[in-house]
Image 1 (tube, rainbow, N blue to C red):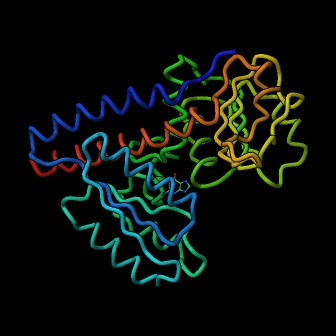
Image 2: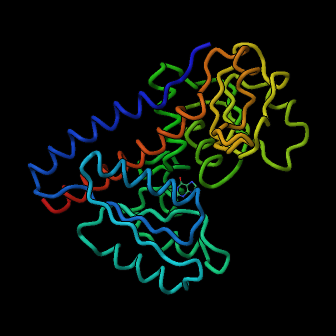
Image 3: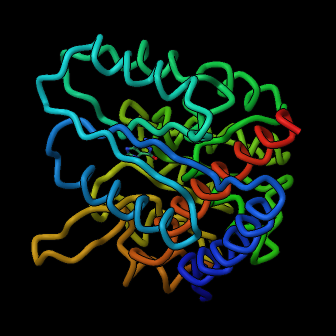
Length: 285
Ligand code: GUN
């Protein structure tokens, strides 16, 4: 069994981004800019935003976080997005999800200028991904593809089983795998007999947020496991969706939690924002 080390690869990518930021700055005089909108006080969202901000600082990006109260109006968020859409110092806009129930999330995501949609959540970019065209791709599944590539794992022709069908992870994950010529199954909360499907997996990718969802009798020998879950166990430690201690014995490769997919998400946010800045600089040149 070999660990897929997302922490190490994330550091390598961040160093690459840092040197490309320096290059961009010497050519254009400006650095990539990321605007983050954080609504309310959910501790997990605040922690994610804090990590994203720290990563931006480390690679030399300009970043600004708009913190808004839980009872904010739709109009107030929309006005902030409109401002960011036209602000030349901002190349990427990220709206930390979930938003509170009074907010129409779809409308908010649709308002982000697609060329600044570094999370890849705008229907324009979702459409480009499903048709296999270049665009912005959601950071977590993009990070998984980079991690697989780093370890020379070719998904072409492999049975890839994605557990979880969210817009942020499961659906774009399945689209990327399909674009890379994998055979893809998507399982979700209504799937009957999950084990029947997971036993088929050459590569099993799980992102649902349920501790120990995947147990050793649910996978075949030699399986590759990508654990996209991040959960807080009763003892306070971070764990994924896979019963790591027992399942890892049967794996050829597996991602640890923490240190697997999580750091890759941050690295892809940086590389998507750099890409947006490079496109904007080319447009201005
Ligand atoms: N909430 C949970 N995951 C994500 C993510 O990748 N991006 C954003 N914007 N919000 C999230």
